[in-house]
Image (cartoon, rainbow, N blue to C red; front, side, top):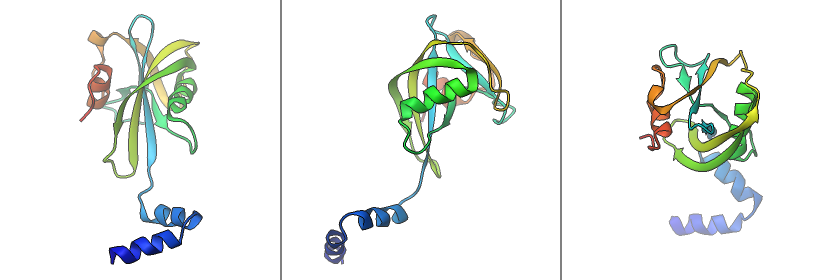
Length: 151
């Protein structure tokens, strides 16, 4: 049976192979998170309107648009949600295992802009030192801030 499948696969080269793969595999959204720091080493946290009321604080995050490079996703999201400009840095985490989502996280550095929050999504934006992180944060975001990979 495996030989037959392999033979058929070779016969349908090109666009048809991609269509078969598309139908046969899961479709994912890619969530991109930024661990944004300023020159003083503080981290940018947002109080998200749409998150659970007991855990509203977290890192800037959003979904990649089709064809968008993931580091540019966090640049766009931070600009949309806060008005701030950032420079993306190294990739710090990739996590799968969610039903239809892959999570990617990058370090980022604040490089300018004026704080102006998007009041539809964000209730508050503040810089926090590592020893004064707010209660009501996702554990995975605390781990990313501390340099640990979320489990």
